Image 1 (cartoon, rainbow, N blue to C red):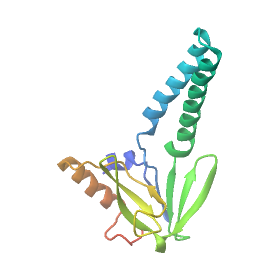
Image 2: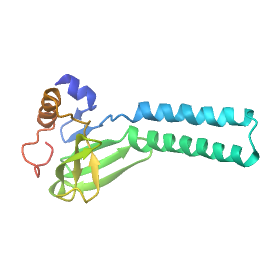
Image 3: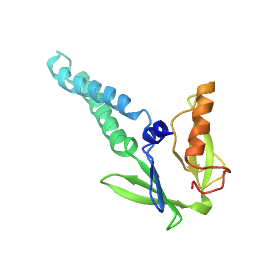
Image 4: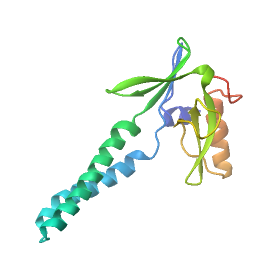
Length: 165
């Protein structure tokens, strides 16, 4: 249980449960940032036509912007379930905290991305509303099923419409 608490950076206080799903953004963002840095530093040293050089530099700039956006808006997102206000909040450290939905409108949805199961919260009962991923991916293996059961017990969900604690 402690491993799962560390994995999700779970913090439980008297009236709040906060969870920070550490998805696989960091490794991807570092690779993209290194690629962008390499493109931006090496391209001017190459003997390229003017238009080709600016095209390649533009790709490096776009990659760098993508990595920065991902680091700021995806890597450190925290979801706060506040029982005193009965609302769910999304917090991006240093930028903002915004209200997502009240407990009564929250639904826990299984979402499949890239062949892996994630859990998301949404104000709709189906996948067509805006949803927020709150878990790591779970595989279909026996180990994946055990992690899934442990995750659900960690956030105390016994039915889809029940608040998370």
